[in-house]
Length: 194
Image (tube, rainbow, N blue to C red; front, side, top):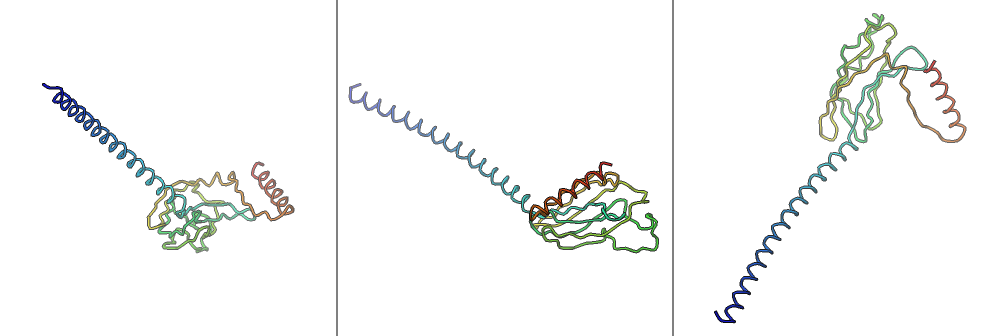
């Protein structure tokens, strides 16, 4: 083998090794690009879910004891940032004015409401007398539609704990109204603790 042939074979061998190294490097680059795209897709999906959760309507049914009288307010409120359509509300056991000792009252039953559209922060309310009511625990199932998705949520409400629930609302405009709100909050808190 002559020196020229040897150099030619050496250059071919080096060229083959460089081609193989480039090929392996390309495969590694393709693999990492694929992994990166997979991670980006996962992040976009998470962002889409997070965006939906932050901006969807959020209908909640709750019971609030009135501070002025003995009645309770039954409220369905949209706490979300988008409109929501109430499809159904199921309260188990169902509310019955007869069990409350008021057989002559045929009041509006909030559980019969269906297909009602609620804008953000809008609510529907009714009243009920739980003073002599035998049932204290209620299973709630609320179904509603928001952002073209149907949502169904189930939870429990125990009437015995309503007196221990604290709520806050801020409508402070100036120092005087702030002091009045603080005074009312302290009075409400002391009434709940007594």
